[in-house]
Length: 104
Image (tube, rainbow, N blue to C red; front, side, top):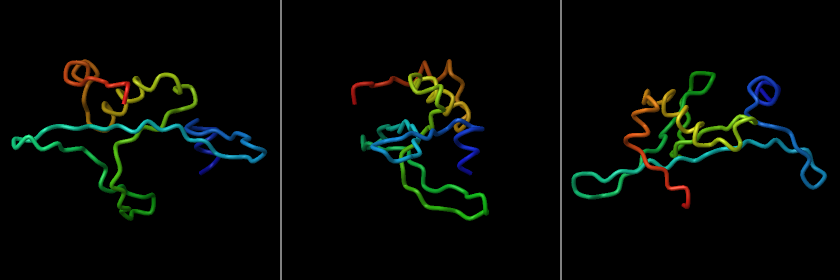
């Protein structure tokens, strides 16, 4: 698994930090919020995920995108790719309906 994420998929890297070899994974957490008909703020969260063994693991986390090493400075494109792959939302539609607040 380590070889696959570091070498093959390039979704993490090995770095020496304070004299210790550490695995670094760059994540972008996505907060997708909306107001319902009662004006209550709602947030889309990941409730669970399937494991390789077929089990279900509870998560209760915000949407997240793992950045490949080459994407570190291109998080916006990684988020767009995530919405295409996970939610089947084409990029032109995303640009029409979503606004990015980069100062949060």
